[in-house]
Image 1 (cartoon, rainbow, N blue to C red):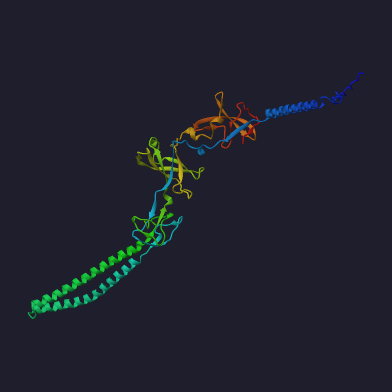
Image 2 (image 1 turned 180 degrees about the vertical axis):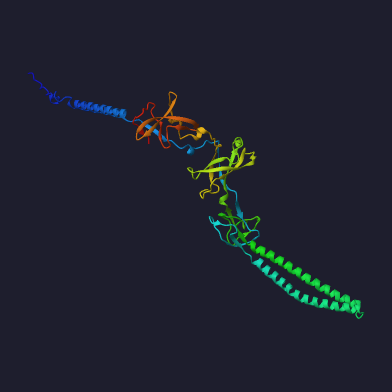
Length: 411
């Protein structure tokens, strides 16, 4: 009898089927959002382009300057240092020990002012001894003069007795010898007094030399010695003896020293105008002039030394400061130059049909103005008519600028 195998039950997959109304709903919404965003971006770009199209163009402006304030052309540039003509390391005339120093760095001193005091006790002792010797010699002279007077009277009596043959010639010779000897003693005493006075003068000079004084008005820039140290006018060959008390600079003698290449020295002459600029104050231009050209060249560097004097000194000008100088040409005076009303940059001038014009910037609006030009000065050009000092001219902007067009000034 045959048996029947039970059939295996298959799983129902219909439950996993996605309904047609739900299939693809979310992707469609996502694409719709992307399209909307793209449309917004395009609209924003079109709106921005419209704004840029309607935006006023940017321009750069510059002020018309006075012809007298324009920088002059430069023949030659050089660098150098501020150097004083009078700078001294003040020393003593004698060797001695420093007792006191009365100055310090930065102190103003006047001519003859005492800078330091040396020990003068030895010279004062010597002077006192010499004065005592002189006074003792002076005290002998009156006694010798009294003796001389008596000897002269005795000589007269002896001479009379000799003529009367009462006294012998030998007595007359003795009386005459006594007179001569007393006169010689008095003369010798006076010479000794003179010698003592001379020695006293030497001692006094040495005492005065113990006071070290300033040779001129100036400022102490270096204090080189201290009390208790030895000082000598010559080097002692060691580090324990000073040769100077202080270094003094006469600020009124400050000038500029530069080395000019010998190939360009022909462009420099005494009295030539120079514009100096200190490295410490780059915005400060100092009018100066060439004082002298040293008549010798440095064969190693191939340069010639030039000294330049400041027109007006200033406390800010200090020795050894770095400085740049510009040698200026002689001023050329002609009618055209004297008639110039203002100077404007060359790029501000626009030429059309043989006529020159500039665009004036005023309250955001362009104004075209015809001008008459003169000579060129470096990067500027002279304006003889049509513009005034202080007017703002456009130096950079669109080539198609029109009169009355609104623009923006570039900051």
